[in-house]
Length: 64
Image 1 (tube, rainbow, N blue to C red):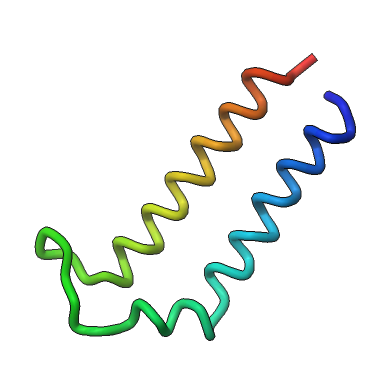
Image 2: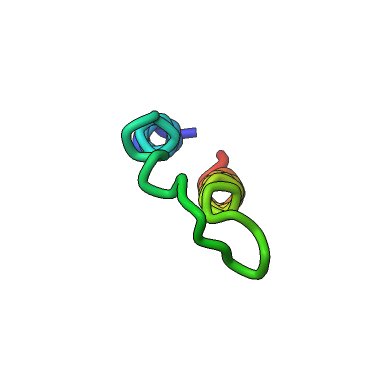
C-alpha cells in the first residue's frame, strides 16, 4: 500500500475522532428523531457506517 493511501485511512480516523468528540456530538444530542431513532444514535451509526465503507473502498481499490 502506498503512503498516500495510508494517509487517507489516517485522515478517516482523525475525522472520526473529531466527529465523535464531545463538542460536536452534543449538537445531535436532542429530542429529534429519525424513523423513531434518536438523532444521536443515527449520527453515530451513520458516521461509523460511512467510515467503514470509505475504508473498504480505499483498501479494495488501492491495496497492492
